[in-house]
Amino acid sequence: MAHEYSKHEYDVVVIGAGGAGLRAAIESARQGAKTAMITKSLLGKAHTVMAEGGCAAALQNADPRDGWKVHFHDTMKGSKWLANWRMAEIHAKEAPDRVRELEQWGAVFDRTPKNLINQRNFGGHTFPRLAHVGDATGLEIIRTLQERGIHEGIDIFMEHTVRHLLKEGDRVTGCVAYDRVSGDLHAFSAKSVVLATGGITRCWSVCSGSWEYTGDGHALALWAGAELRDMEFVQFHPTGMVWPPSVRGILVTEGVRGEGGRLTNSEGHRFMFDYVPEMFRGDHAETIEESDQWVEEVVSGKLATVRRPPELLTRDVVAKAINSEVKAGRGSPHGGAFLDISHRGEEAILKKLPSMHHQFKELAGVDISKEPMEVGPTAHYVMGGVRVDAETQETTIAGLYACGEVASGLHGANRLGGNSLSDLIVFGKRAGEHAAKRASDLAQPGFDEKQIEQACYDILAPLNRGDGENPGVIYDEMREMMQQKVGIIRTKSELKEALEELDSFKQRAMATSSGTSKKYNSGWHQALDLLNMADISKVAALAAITREESRGGHTRDDFPTPEDDYWGKHLNIIWMEGGEIKVRQEKVEALRSDLEEALNEVKMMIQERAAELGGGK
Image 1 (cartoon, helix red, strand yellow):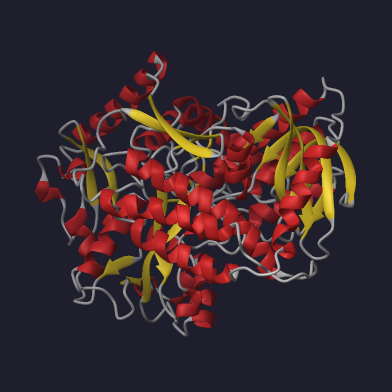
Image 2 (tube, one colour):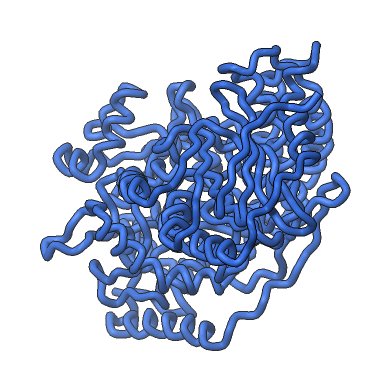
């Protein structure tokens, strides 16, 4: 019996309505393409809102020494030299214009006394570089983009989940989705499809992401034959809430540390001074002084002018430090560390961190202007994702584009805070622009009834099984397993166990039963999400066991010495063939000579400044 479904025809379909999806849809529509945006949740409920601290761009408002070359240097260094350097170059050069564009569209950024966009310090950035709106920057960007998008004539399908990409030969020609409220089925014909579905962090039991973050776009790309890269690199943000249990994992913005927040253990010791990496110590260990409350970076044996509190070292360093303190028995009462900003005073906190003040008061009964917060690492962001062309954001499958967190390349092994928001607007624009340009030269694809029928059958399968396991049980068990065996610290033996268990979870996921109703059936939605999560969890575990080193967001306890200070040897490329997930390793492409010169120029600038200050003292 044939399934009933509605048909829709568009030039460009954007899947996802966060910052990247909105920016892609706006640009596509501005290019004259008939554009639709499909979002799993409600418009405005995007994880972009959780990017509270700021948007990184070398505007030079806070320090005239900043510029695209310094931002490029910081991104490459932060990525542990695994970033796609073409994307890092484009990002550093174009981010300022994209931020100014948001301002022209009505974004209300915090101002300097000279009425310029204000910029704050953040971990891994040489100069204050994050344009911000208190601690609600992502929210303001979403508001601005939605306001702009309303006037571009974009059709929006809210509470619809895409489960299948349609193909004709080796090119993508549309997708199949279902309405999460009514259960109705929809087929979309599209000349170009843009994935902007965000991340995968619901695969872990302690995460900052909400229910939507189940790796939909990663799985759609994998199933369609596209390549993924860097999937072992998952960023555990150092500071998520740890108490009460109902809010465990909710993000505590890096802006708290950017504004002077201090991390202490149960003994009251400011422990981050004990975890400063050797690359910051150099031959000048005496420069790391708790009394001065800053760390001076060492470049080629010379002290740099970069002074930052140790709490603003890169996220991987801070997360692992908190993890180590807890394991050593020096954690806070609920298994984290203390983060204290109260010394800044209530007035400054309410001005700079109003959302954090409200969040802790309402959810934990803690007044952060008077007492410390309890925080701990939370799965926050995946650096890996769908492999894309740096210029166009097209994937390895024709007609399929990706941008934002679902795409890979810019962040390498570790993402700097603030680079996610500028990533969204820089590459969201590029994805929408090139998707629309491609569509302008193509005829409207037809509807392949056989493919659509199979997709509809797969979507409805959990409803048609008379008996089967409750998907919620598998969901909880699989996420806890990932937390324990593919978490912040990894070993070969545990990763091997995880891969075996994930095969079992996948079999169980394919045999779930969720009742028969198509309306408001959360069990049905979860049964489908499990299929993504099982495959993408396996991708992450397979990439992790293949990379036999510790680098950035990937820490192997059996390879304890971090490989930070040289060019990455290889990338892990993952794809699916005949239903089997496979991995291969590729050498990192050598840096273009002029960009090598740019890096050296930045290093020289830092060294010269250090010499002027007599070695930083």
